[in-house]
Length: 345
Ligand code: FES
Ligand SMILES: [Fe+2]
Image 1 (cartoon, protein in one colour):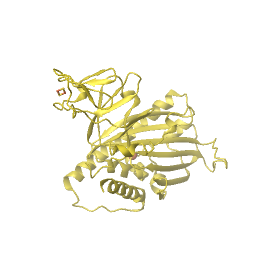
Image 2 (cartoon, protein in one colour):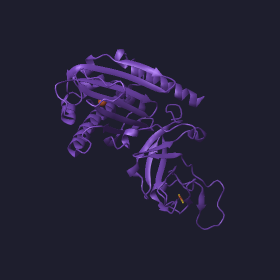
Image 3 (tube, protein in one colour):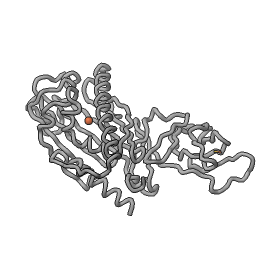
Image 4 (cartoon, protein in one colour):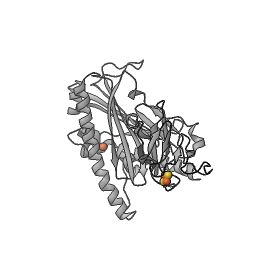
């Protein structure tokens, strides 16, 4: 695991609503973790293995700001230090489990798995559209039996929408329109832009935005490796451009966010959210977007589960062939490789 996954990074581990005063278990980057809230509501994240006999702490009880192992009662505080063992007063000095830096940015809980000293100096990726009242959003999570990189390939190349998601978000123009991709090493971003002019409005957008007729449809991806991917989607009546001051009232905007987190080397958590700046109070639109996004994600999950099996079974026996549409995905592979090399050296 150490070599194949970037660990010196913030990853989304859970939704805020997942973590309560009951222990919540989840494996991130191969590390079994237990999450719970202290008496003030802050999140405590510890290794989910008791030092005594490795019983998962998630099967124990939260007591105050500590967690008590459900097997023989070893109790750990927020720093992972054991503060009580049964049958004796002195506690072995090595009785501690690892505590993980954790930041809650509603609706997501971010955790740091790698070198702890680097956590404080690394900013947590921002996702303002999930908390700004000018936006509303829907979201869910999927678990995929595929390595992290396969989901990144998928997200960086949206031409697959035309085929894998035909009849949903895919129209022929998506695959037909060339992309521009670029790497911004300063900002640590990979960008892929696809601007479609005067295209048919897919039923997905017609229903949810109320814009009909021919549209200009922009898809601007910004990916901040390794975890946060944002697709800035703009739908406007044909020929309408944003104003010089950046305002863009005639257009509808969506931010399609994916937080991609390795569970293990061969499985991935896919947190997704669709934020929009129109029809804010329309529950019907929210439900429509959620149902649609769930279908689309499931189509990706099904495809990636198949692909992982093929790759696991056959290894590198067959070489892949890349074309222009893969430039964003290839840039991402290179960026992730550099991050891994920096971490492992
Ligand atoms: S395994 Fe946790 S106290 Fe024994
Ligand atoms: Fe997809």
